[in-house]
Image 1 (cartoon, helix red, strand yellow):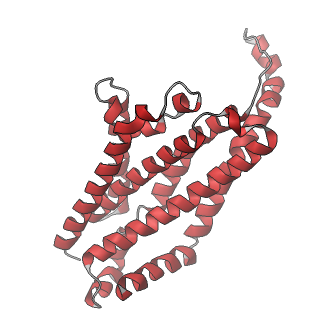
Image 2 (cartoon, one colour; image 1 turned 180 degrees about the horizontal axis):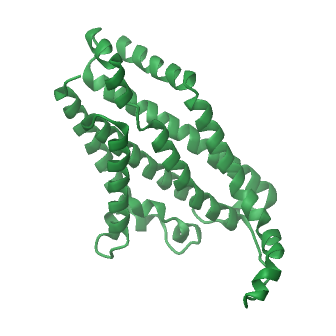
Image 3 (cartoon, helix red, strand yellow; image 1 turned 90 degrees about the horizontal axis):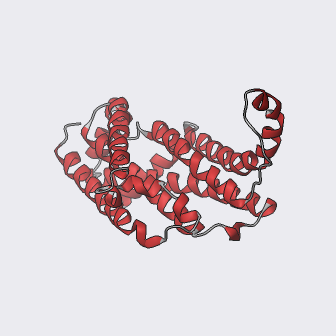
Length: 256
């Protein structure tokens, strides 16, 4: 366990030293501020563009914004934050292959499965930190301007979207164990995510696609409840564990 903690400490220090931690915090904080800010400024922006819209034949009516508007903006923006997160940390494994530091750690007694475990814990903790910052800032400002209680199942919606991010991290770990460069990791992770999204729009496979966890509007509006997402939650959790298991097996056979 001592070697595992030492390797994890090295990972966190390197994340801070390379500036990725600061970028992560600033990025998610920015999105957290943007969500209620865009909602608050929407009536003003519509008023600004009303003349040009009328000239185009469009009728502009008064726009009413509330907490639901802010949280809708949150769930529209968080996919962009997740993409940025994936791009930022897609080299978590591959940089070790190129620099040779992984081989050095292995020769000092670090087990290969501990490498996968340490990298996974790192990515999960960073995703949870960033997501928590974004959610907390949005929640605070939305509570200040409006009333969060009008939004249905808010915590559940936030939790299942966090789980979708965990599923994406599982893909990053999987392809990082199989491929040599972060470009391949990013492309494969994006490809599987797009495939899961396509499955989520097909009626027969929709309920079992992890990408369904991104569709929170029905949950926020009260049209759907937790039961409608149970199959997707189970599918995301089980497949993530499968990804990590395959990653361990692949790492055990990998030449570094």
